[in-house]
Amino acid sequence: MKNKVVIITGASSGIGKALALECARHGAKLALASRSVIADPLLASLAPDALFCQTDVTREVDCKELIKKTIDRFGKIDVLVNNAGISMRALFDELDLEVIRKVMDTNFWGTVYCTKFALPYLLESQGSLVGISSVAGYKGLPGRTGYSASKFAIQGFLDVLRIENMKKGLHVLIACPGFTTSNIRNVALSKNGSSQGETPLDESKLMPAEKVAVSIVKAITKRKERIILTTQGRMTVLLNKFFPRFMDKMVYNHMAKEPDSPFK
Image 1 (cartoon, rainbow, N blue to C red):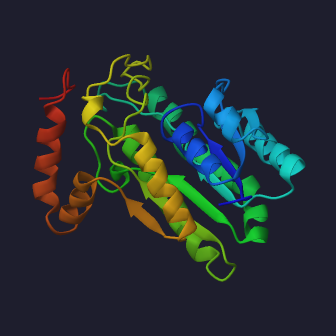
Image 2 (image 1 turned 30 degrees about the horizontal axis):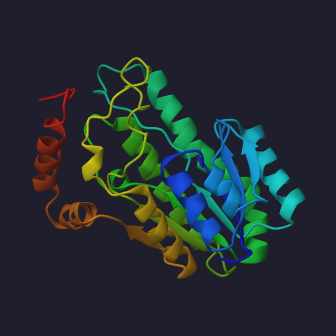
């Protein structure tokens, strides 16, 4: 990763911030995008020449500007990590459709926009295109229709790009963390589009974002096609291949146990 130019969206918190720190420790040159201003003393000391771009990935023009600024500063792009994302938690028959639009605009269209403008440079460098998906991109999670739909869409999109560019040296990685320590659940959208405010999970028992970042950086350097993190996540994906109806019941029961679950 040393001297590789790495773009990370959603870099102000959670997995994105942990990835920025991990890449910086490996000597990468960073272009960090987020809607909020990134102010982290440790990151500043590790990557003093990092480019910070205030970016809303739901806006095509913002994504185009992010790529332009990166090229203007560093002259190339070696890795694009599409990490920016939001979640939601509500039953489909109760939610405002605008909730799904917002989730898809950020998670799916944000990935599409950034990838579209970065792809020529990634092909030139034979670099890595990374999508931060989820186990929810393999198994639909009840109460997360918009979130699961966006992650399924991201995986299909990236799979096609891998095949289309298989003779051009492009590396495509789909990274699927399980439940990870992050503020994504605090700001998850409720049925009317307002922020959930509180996480329904015990964050202390989840995989640390820093550990997720280490695994993703290793997967980039080894040019892996996909990784599924956490034992629970790998078991969910494996069992769903052979026992999908059984896993429907297991996932339902697991999600129904959440505090203030929208279904019982």
